[in-house]
Image (cartoon, rainbow, N blue to C red; front, side):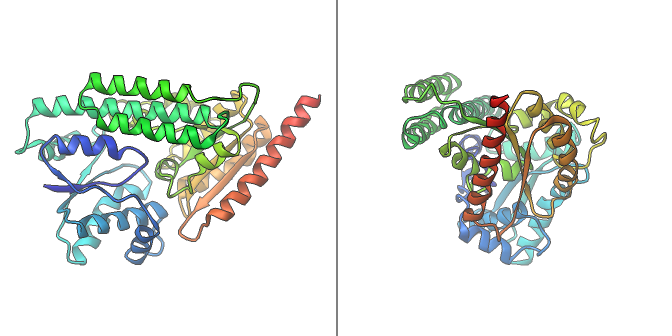
Length: 359
C-alpha cells in the first residue's frame, strides 16, 4: 500500500517507522501549513471543527502525493470525531480519490474491527512476528518522544538561551528517528536527554506553572494551537500538558484508565459528555490541588464537550482559586491574538502570585 496518516506533533516519527517496516510505501503526511488549512476549509462542511478541516487538507495533500490508503483513529461516544474517518472517506471518494480508509477503532470497544484493520496492515506484506518486533520499536520511540517533550517543557522557561534548548531538543528528535531497535532507541533517548540537561539554565528563576488541557488534537498539534507551549516557554512559563500520546493510548486503547481523573471531576460533572470534556474538569481540579498558577483550556470552535467543560470552569475557579482561560480555535484565529491573550493571562497570574507572596 502507498499509505499515509494524520500529522500530529512528533508522532509521525514512530508511525512512519511502523508502517515502513511492515513493508508499506509511506507517503509522509506534510506538516500542516496555511495551504493545508485552506484546502481543508474549502472541502469541509462549514460547521465541521478545526481538526476535521486540517485532517481533510492533510489527506488531500497526501493523496495528491500518491497515497492510495489512509489510516486514522476512530472513536466512540457523543463526540462526532468518531465519524470523521467515514466522512473524510466519502468526501475524498466524491472528489474522485478512491482511497482506502483504515479506521482503527479502540480495541476495547471494537476488538474484531480493530483486529481486521490491523491485519490488513500486517498482511500480506509482513508477518505477525515482524509486526510484534517493529511495534515494540515504534512504541519505544513514542515513549521517548513524549519524555523528551516533557523535559523540554521543564527546561525551556529556565534555559538561558531559548534557541539553544529548542535546537538541542530538535537534534534529539533526530536521534530517535534514526534508531532502529529498542536498545538503540533507549540509547538515543538517553543521549538526547543528556544533551538537553547540559544546556545552561537559570536555577534561581521560579516560573509560573500552567496546566494545558482540552481536546487532544488541538493540544498535541502545534500548528493548530499556534505553538502555544513554545510561546509560553519562551515567555518563561513552565507548561505541563495533561495529554501525551502514549498515556492516552494506554488509558483509552489498552486499558480503561483515567478513572482517577474522572473521579476528580465527579463533584462538578458526574457523567461522560464525549471527547475530553469530563477529563478537562478533572484535570483542572488536579492542577489546582497541585498548586499550579493557572490552566489553559484549548478547544476547537463548536466542540460541545469542551463547551460543557468551559461552562463549569467558573465554579472550579471559585472553589479552588485557580484561574482558567479558554481558547477556542478555528481557521480565523490568528497568532497575534493568541499572544495578546497569553500576555494578559500571565499578567493576571503574576499579580495573583504577588498578592499571595505578600501575605
